[in-house]
Image 1 (spheres, rainbow, N blue to C red):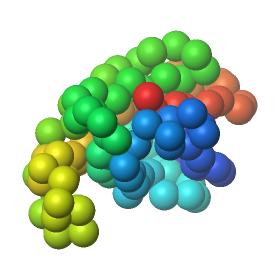
Image 2: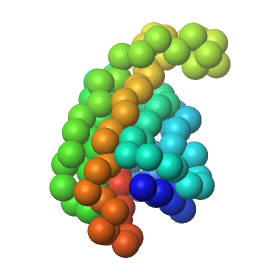
Image 3: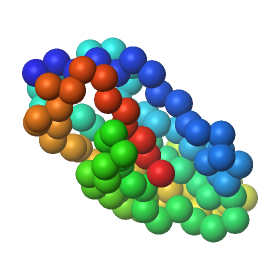
Length: 108
């Protein structure tokens, strides 16, 4: 199976609630196989982000814990105690999406 990642964006209302974030993967381009790996980091503006929700075409398919050690982020945001464990990493099996021509995946 081949999947094409054609756009990655963050809804404006989410960025207002965050100190910072980055989606390290997936990258734009074609993914071969039945797994999509999601990885990155997120720091809440007022409160720690503990969980991300993965939504495909308005259907919640899984949740990601935000608890991975990210010393690279902690170095940049050294005054923020959330930064040391603000990472997430999760692989998702996408079997069955091949019949969907255009779908939207969202992380909340």
